[in-house]
Length: 330
Ligand code: SF4
Ligand code: SF4
Image (cartoon, rainbow, N blue to C red):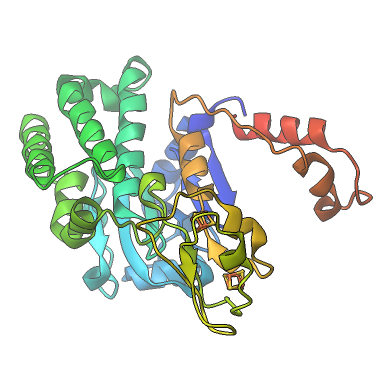
C-alpha cells in the first residue's frame, strides 16, 4: 500500500475510509454534485450517485443495507467536520449542505456494533495524524491552531476507554470541543454532537466501566453467550472457581474474582465465551495517518489458515501472510 490515506479498507466486519485520494476526490466533486463515498458498517461500500430526494435510509439501501442486519446508530458526513446524523434523520432527505465545503464528500455509517467512544477516538486519532501532516493538505493547516485542544480530547477519550475517567471528563470534552468550534468557526463539531447524542453510552463507560460492544479492550469482560450448552467444561477449567451454573443450563462468570486467564475460553467446546473482537479497531488503526501498526502471529496460524485460501491443508503460508499484512499497511 503506497499511501494508506487513499485506501478503502474493507472486511467482513465493515470498511474504513481514511480519506479519498486527491484524484478520487476531484472526480467526485467535478463529475457529479451528488456523488458520495459511503463506508462503515454497510454491505457494499463505495462511491454512489445519490438520487434526488434520497433519504439516509435510501442511501443505506443502495449500499446493500447495514452489515448483519444490525441497527443503525449514526452517520458521519464529511471529514474532518461535517454533519453527524442519528436515527431521527434516517427518513429525512439528505441535506448536502451538511458536507462542509472544505470536507471530503463521504459518509461513514455506524451500527449498534460500533462503540461511540472508540469511534470518537479513531476520529480524533485520524485528525491528529492529518494535523501532523498538514503541510501536505491545505484543509488541515487551520487545525494546527487547535492542536493542543485536539490532543487533550484524545487523552480524555483514551482515559474513558480505559475506565480511568470520571464525569468531569465529559465537562472537559464539552469545553475543549466548544473551544475548537469557536476558534475554527465551525458549524458542526463531532465531539459535541457525540456527547449530545450518546451521553448515556459515555456515562456507562465512565460510571460502570461497561463497553457493550466490547470494543474498548480495557473494559471488555469475558461473556458466556447463549450458545452455552451447560457442559461445565469451563467451570472445571477455571483455576479460581469463579464460574457457576447448572448442568445443561447457561453458565455465568463471577467477575469480581475472574483473573482473565482465558482457561475457560480454551476449554469451551462450542465457542460460547466471547472475549471481544478487535478487527475493526485494527482496520481503523491501519486507516489512521502516521500510526505505526505492528502485528504478532500465533505460531499455528501459518499452517492453519492456508486451507481457507485453497492451499493444501497444513501448507505453511507464513511469507504470504507477511506479504498480505504489508499490503494492508502493517
Ligand atoms: S478467564 Fe480464567 S478466571 Fe476468568 S472465568 Fe475464565 S477460567 Fe475463570
Ligand atoms: S464450556 Fe462453554 S458450553 Fe460448556 S458450560 Fe462453559 S460456556 Fe457453556
